[in-house]
Picture 1 (cartoon, one colour):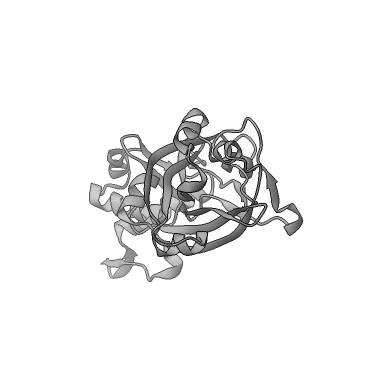
Picture 2 (tube, one colour; picture 1 turned 90 degrees about the vertical axis):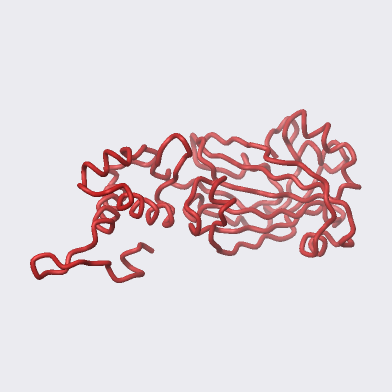
Length: 266
């Protein structure tokens, strides 16, 4: 839903007639150019100065329009690089523990991973309940940023019972793959026990990592993986920009996953 559909136009009076405020005119113009492909998917917007010159307005006016488009998920800002039109979203299949790269199905997309942090902590109430362990249990907490075509797309935090994966650091360091960690510790088959998707708005920290405006709409996902004997092995939560992907839920018959050998970015 666009800004025009959820609020009355901000307006000022010019020669006795109500005209849209300058920032709303810029917003509507750029939005129309994006939807008509005059500003193609993945293209970089003109600089703030160029937009100021084009519309004869101040930087604050341009920034207000760009922020509105970012909050709709139509633009993404890359710090120190510029503002870009978001690409057409790929499909992401909700399957049982498949590697992230295997779940992205749009042809030609490149997928990357940045590991932001790895720590060991005491499980808080929600992950402890999801993993069916006491709150005092030590868990491995790994936070990663997934990128599609070099665009920040998915900020994800996984929590795994530390006792199940004593060699996590050494194995993960070799290939940056949680699938490899599973396999090394004797877990060749695992399944997605549950996936929940809700909505929300970007916090300051999430916005900074994903290249969004604070308060931009997000899709939030929570999931639990278990091994073939039913033991909970992973609790995961993350967030996606609203227009980053289209989710696909395959039939239950496709729901079991055998860990692939030689994979990366699990």
